[in-house]
Length: 296
Image 1 (spheres, rainbow, N blue to C red):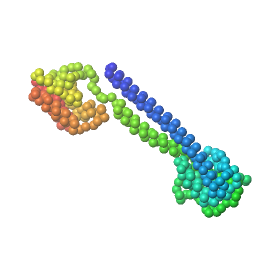
Image 2: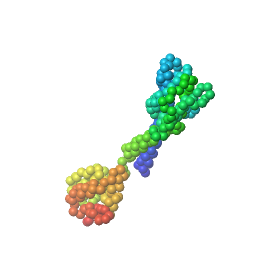
Image 3: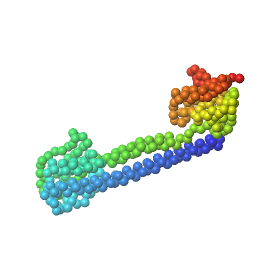
Image 4: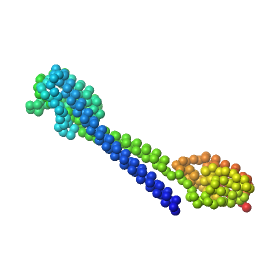
């Protein structure tokens, strides 16, 4: 009873440890993903300022400032300038695509160049994941000098998608770690200590299970741990048929290993060690299993 309680406690201890490990790992993933998002957004704002900077240079202005980038909606930003400027539509498209290709969260977006005075759209284009879905028009036309603002709206849920990919990847890793942890933590199946305290008289052979040996006419024959476990099952039920599946389960499958031919090998080794007494035999019961036959 005490051993079973200890085993149950051990299982609960390992289970608690696994749950704690998983919780800590998921929390780490959540915080790390959140930090990663903050970093990506900060990087995006730098890229947007770079777009404004290159447009000013293309306009021939190398001295005036790009004003602070504004976040005007959840997924929309606005680039403004200190002075008026002009731009080539194809240069704006190429510059934006080249720089935003470095933004891991920007797969699809819409760019609108807005007149400062009346808010009308002077130019716009849309970039999609698939090139065939891009909407780009009026390439090659130079826009007049004016006060412009550039609004860039990113497709919503892009950040969530990246977060989900990180999370799903982390869950896969956790599942693997959990499997390895359980495999390592699984207690080895042992027969109760009390079963090893008795000596078994098998004909003229004495089976000392605790010390893993056979005593035959004052001669000692050593047994391996597996041989001892197999013979103990037979010794506890002499002259009874022991199913092959039971032997496999109690000796190997409970430890997470399934074998077939190994059982026959150990039976063969035990037969040789018991052959000193012709009245003791391990016989095959076809279609069922084995029996330790002891005759007077």
